[in-house]
Length: 77
Image (tube, rainbow, N blue to C red; front, side, top):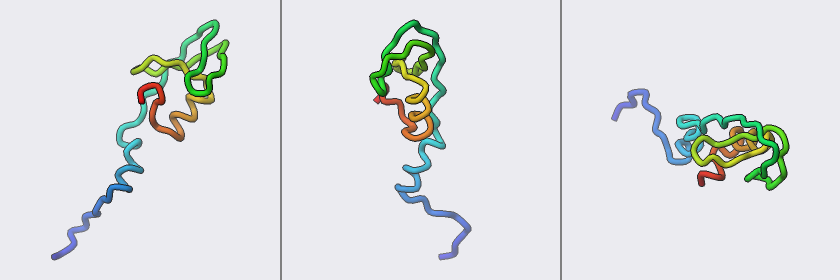
């Protein structure tokens, strides 16, 4: 059988690249007087970031961690 230059994709490779194929949508920035971050349970008194799907509120640090490391919204899961 001749190799036609095709690369076989194994399940671990596909799992690692899944978030590149379907990125998490950007959270919307909202100004609230007081809210509790769903990720770290801290009280947020300025800007909160809301998931467009589940509408849960997150602080800036958790928003960055979710988009850069987790690639999944904990509120949606």
